[in-house]
Image (cartoon, rainbow over the protein chains, first blue to last red):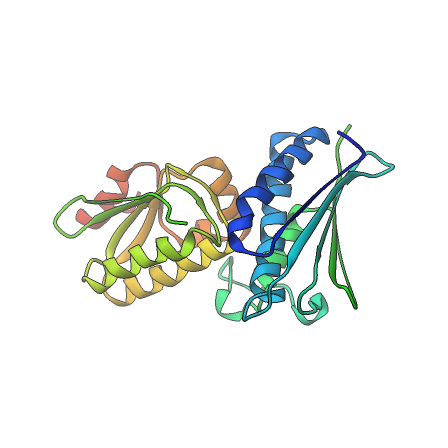
Length: 143
Length: 119
């Protein structure tokens, strides 16, 4: 895989399929097996759905900028940037489980997406500055 | 975007609904509309055939849970069948494997409603 590849799409649900194709190719080229490719695909789908639904929406529109790169350790690093409302993950607790299943009544906005991202990726980090939200996720590539 | 969703009457009051492709934030509203329409028409015994479903996002899980709740409150249920391994993995992550009745085939799912047989 080339050192870095980027994709910029409108922050709309209709962009999710294009994002998925882009991520699938990047994950395969990074050397992930099919399980790993699926996990990255789902984590990114949930992350971008959160952006579209919560950072944008209600009259606010903008782009989603994705960058995929192989870091110095050979792992896949995905950066997702938006220019919408700030998202603070510390305000979103992990979902509770009731009788062995996620208690959907109790899940905060964005909480389930965040749960999947943390479950499926090795590292998940959020930042926010005057330009918007910046999410970094890393998936280890087993050599 | 409107996904392809096949609807079929199995026994007199058991219905099969088979969406295809991805159940994600784009396609879930149409899927949910079909389920709601069915419940509004008094059809609350639903077999969701997932044979053609390759992905279910959190919005799909939420929709299934909410329609299952309503169906059960109206004397029916929503059961699932023909789940692909990837979709099963998603259900396992959120514990939905123990929440939903899941069958290997449409026939087994149908039997649960007609004979009360939980396989």
